[in-house]
Length: 101
Length: 180
Image 1 (cartoon, chains in turn orange, purple):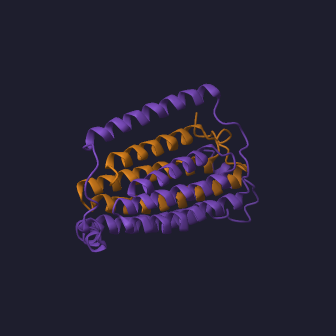
Image 2: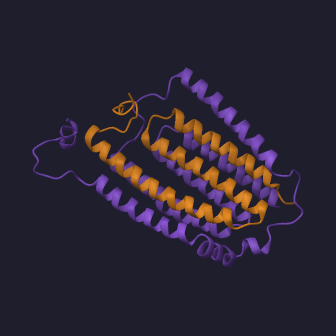
């Protein structure tokens, strides 16, 4: 028996919620990035599931683009963390609050 | 059979993503992220997107996760320094996450017809040729723009992570420049 597409969508919803909770509660910059990667993957899973449901390649193409954007985001974000670490010697977001208020 | 594979890897993905979110040590979190990405890649293959599954393993676990590990080792972050958000904030975040999950599930169930499908993914959907044709005809311009985006990201990352120029005689040159 094949698995209904709605199960995949529910799994993606669970992953997205877990990633959101992580991104909101963690205080380590790297950990927040990892949580965001989980959220991106949940979105990718949703896109692939709808691609299967609609029998169309468009969802897969969009996932391709999302992968590329995730790579760019990781490269730039981690470079920013290195730059911040060089100045502050921490990437604890409780201590990097220059732009917060 | 497909149901069994789905259940195993769905459970694996959720458990590993919980570890990603909950573990104190970023190295363990990154390793759990690898497990999550692999499990989701298997689900991609189940959904009739084997090429995207391969890309996921190659790009995410091959490049992005290695980059993460590299930076973690480079900065020697180790365990988190300060506490997580306060208990009250965690409570509200948990409520927010539950509401988000419920909303997404309702949205998913309302958009897809229920019940098991009798057939697997169609041959046209699985074929790499069809994906390539869609990518290089209908979405050619976005594809080129993505290339440009990656180039700009590489240049930006190089500039941002570059060592500040020597010989300025100051430990925090940027800080002084920031003053008007």
